[in-house]
Length: 361
Image (cartoon, rainbow, N blue to C red; front, side, top):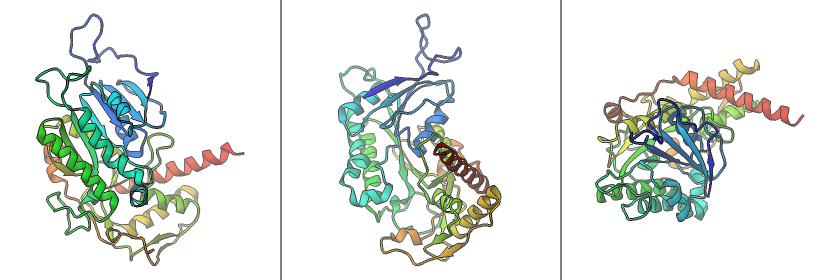
């Protein structure tokens, strides 16, 4: 494991971090696992704006985001239990956003995906258990808070609209089963008093990436790339299937809200969503219009096509999320309208393509 100090890690004048002449309690240490990923980088950037000690952990080296946080960057393979233990040592809060490469499709075929999606959580709650090792919490201190990025799709085929988190879980894919298993491990460790666990079940997240290399692989960005290439946007249905789309910045704000209001959340899972239920046909047409406005070319076509044999049943069921319980507990609500989020996503991808083309000239 490599630890890279932040070039912006000097303690600001108003920071709660300790100094040689101060007896004030140190600022909380927040460790983000998967900090270089799409959601992880957005959460890390949001936390960097706070006067905290921030430890950004990922396999890929990254640049600390700007802000008053005292930030360190750690490069580590978190499937290595000893590297994981060192990465989270002394943490007051761990935000778990680690995800196996390839998303849900990798979970179906890659045996290593379960080690990342489930095994790391199993190791995490174990290494965070109170013990005599260096860096452990003082006797009587509260267990560390662990906030986990779950998935709304863990429920399986949605039994109703909207989902509110009270539905029984019947995961329909290996990925969703792995996410549910990790969440159950966290809940069990919370019940045992080892950690204080909170699971935020995320909707369909989209938006521009917070850092280079942390590209969104979701449906909005995938279709924006097709539109940028002049290709038609295809659907496996008639376009009336709905998804609850939330911009990555709003998802990051949900994590910071959970850190600010953990007590009513500990031990449970909480659905995060905009509550709109956006029809994918209209979303795709919005993408086509945004790309047209950005490039000056006519909008690409939006078409229905026959689905492939590997399409999961959840792709044909609508999802709308009622996150009122989480909102009431934390005060969070999404702020970025769908149209603005799509415009920003399209513009960012167009700029990225222009930069890539310029680099090969």
